[in-house]
Length: 42
Image (cartoon, rainbow, N blue to C red):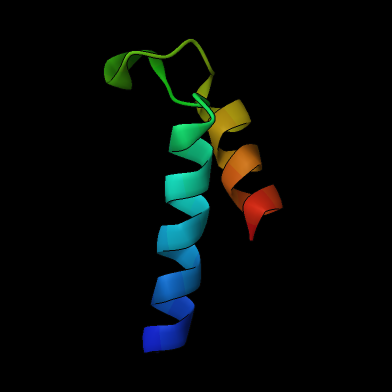
C-alpha cells in the first residue's frame, strides 16, 4: 500500500498547492469541490 498512499499524498499536495482548499484551511472551495479536485488529481 505504500505506492497507493504516495499517490494520495501527491494528489492532496497538488490540490492544496493549487489553492483548492476549504474555508477551514483558508480557501473558498466547498467540500465537494475540494474532494472532486483530489479525485481528478489521482
